Image (cartoon, rainbow, N blue to C red; front, side, top):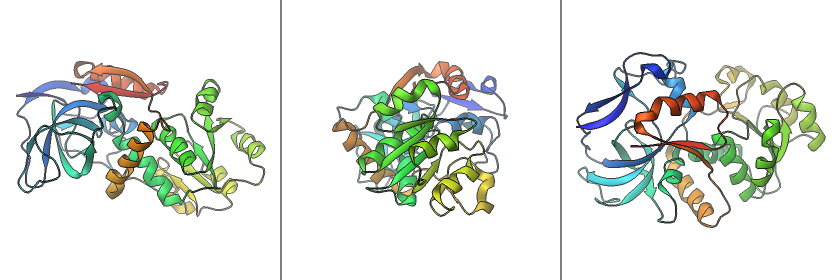
Length: 305
């Protein structure tokens, strides 16, 4: 038997329990990972609470966890990209708040020995999403990018990835996060009432592209600053489709492995940092989700079985 975090009804973290279940068996073209680390993402507690049921419906009993890093301990028929004993990271097929998770080799990459497990387990969703969003926006050298909620998981990656591409990055963050954003290569503008004017003070002619990781009603201002909706992309304002902006919901998608290879190269070159704020054992999964939901984490929250 293997331990996994599971829920049988929507609710707060209190409906989540650690239960013993048979380890999942990999099918053809799949691998099984003995999980070493799994990053916490806001989508996890939103799924738990039923807030994303229209986009990500679940079948009860259900698990959580969409980031994974671990050791391959079993391979399915036809798998040649990974062998038993390989260390990998990426996006799983099954919930990763567990001792074992299944994965598609196409969405995994090899873990460099220099990258700690806690960091490896925090890259797949936030890093892959940021990379895919910048790719859709066509952000490159000479562009000025505005990242709304630049202090969050995706925002932190987006700032650093865009900077590595040669873009100038302005990010909205809280007053206490200005220095941290500057250290990542971004220029801070405090969020809240009047944020548009504060961005205008930094970029009088507006910006070339906007990545909205906030979803708190900033789309009209983003469109105005970008001179139209064409290069505005939101990860959170699902009700903004009628404005003409891009809505991105599938994380790294088919670009996940490519994104992770670029991110890992930047990590090894010390051009991208992944701050890990707190690490919890699987038995503390409720506390990990509550911390993520509170919104004050200064870095990734990671669960280790």
